[in-house]
Image 1 (cartoon, rainbow, N blue to C red):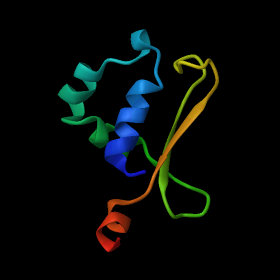
Image 2: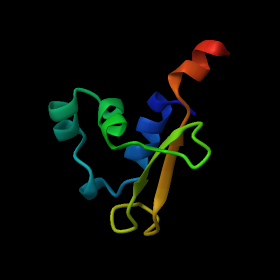
Image 3: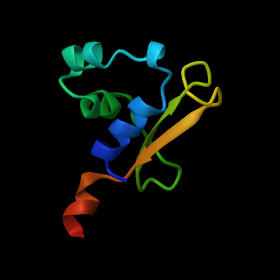
Image 4: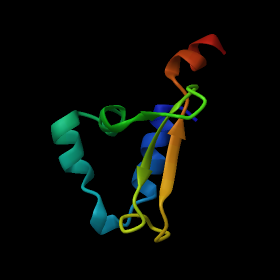
Length: 76
């Protein structure tokens, strides 16, 4: 998955009352930009991730949204 798909998963994984997409877009222009600002490297250093807390997630458990760098897509 790449950041554009991760952005949609990030939105879909939140309880509706726990995410304000319009506010994110006002501050970061895109959800992708917001994710990029929060991103941490994966343990294998081959991707990025953000974690949604259990309080905010639709499952009530932490959810990790992970993606590959766009440079991987360019090589494919």
